[in-house]
Image 1 (tube, rainbow over the protein chains, first blue to last red):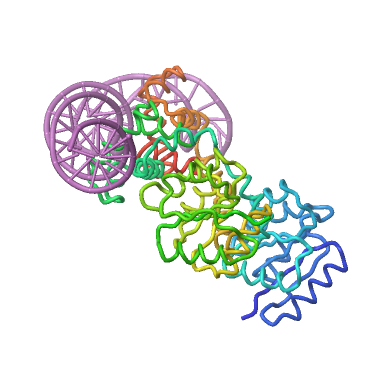
Image 2: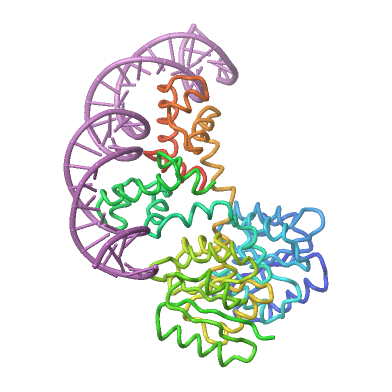
Length: 207
Length: 207
DNA sequence: AACAGCATCACCTATTCATGGTATAGCCTG
DNA sequence: CAGGCTATACCATGAATAGGTGATGCTGTT
């Protein structure tokens, strides 16, 4: 069963090139190619693509907005963003909006088809430089780490499970130790973080 | 100028295989291979690696903790995590701790050397499936908001103060209401979120 | 006026958590 | 080997939290 692909790209020659690429690839079927995303939801409903290639810089309605709608209405549809720009902000917002991957337009044809197959298989294709930007948007809390590596490995595990909302009993079961040992670890954590309750510890642990 | 590489991997045969791989690759120089990360900071200071390969499952001191320290003390050193596990949680914590990329151990030798070069060049190599997990940790606002606007204004205030680590008593004082009222609000919050403790509520409230 | 939703307060019981003390065993370091 | 750190485990007591039930007053809306 071929992967059904839809394309949103305002640049006509690129759109046609992508269409040809999809059409001529055995495992892929083109179910639509559009110059704007004004009717993305309607198109998606009608033609049931598995994967959508979405230009991030579409005129009129922004490609990122379109992704938001697609992701809400068709959560199983995978969206790959296409762009010429190395734009941190757009990367972040697209992924927040529900895009599953991100490709620069200078990607080679083979890589594009690979990416489509990959995202359909549950992957998240992106170039290493894009991945780096994604990572850099992570909370790299150098502030909390001071407190964090005060904690021993076991203590970190304990507070981690507590953060999931687990009770002492569940943490003990999870770590296969006595509940009394869990208590002991928690006491030490409290001493180190200068707190007196789980929630207070969590407030310091992940602020 | 060759890229200076250090390796932390407790499995001896894998460590030696990686060492050989690095040594025999022209653009790479091995500056250290260790079975634990107890002296990672000291080693790094002495031998000035450009890229560190760090097993995530080191015995004794956890590889993730080591990354935290390395990232703080040597912000220019790139860290690549190595693991056999497909573990969402470890992925997230490693990247939060400052790792620049993530590789499964079954990666082929060529891909490993490519990854080292890529991360040194400012990329963030990771497998598509790992990238997908990273993306899924993003705030996908559509899901969490559903729970959030279940809560009334007062309930939101209460859980907000609880998230700061405040006790019922302090929340009551802060909002200038009775502790019993605080308890009532909390009961309603529990019903709405289907949880049974503050920490569990917080795990749902800000995941 | 009746109703639903929200905020407020109270009482009772059972469970969980916080704190202190005590103890054993393994590991690494000086 | 002594001393430090970590992980493990138990006991006892008081404080905090969770669950249940009920009640008042103030909003809106129907």
